[in-house]
Image 1 (cartoon, rainbow, N blue to C red):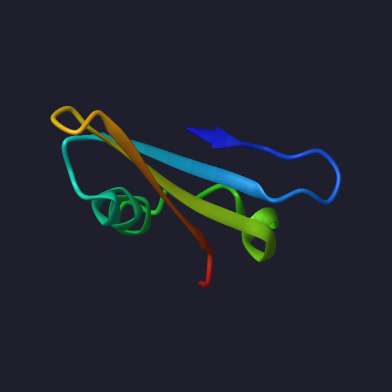
Image 2: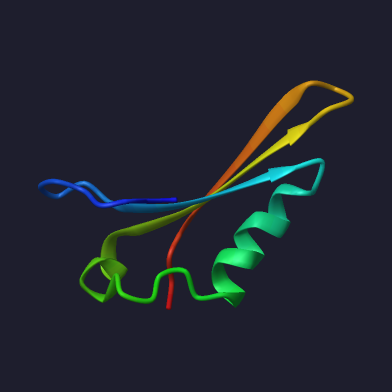
Length: 68
């Protein structure tokens, strides 16, 4: 999922996972280069991984600033 900003807000790439480590989502964004086509936003881009654990019923979120 990609959010394109208005103004000076950062662009965001969001990967959702179910019953996986949150780092898996961030790694997938990087390995599959989901930022391709967003070159004009690379200096202000957030990579966001969100996971849901069905046993604990909790969400975990990790946010990283893109550093190419």
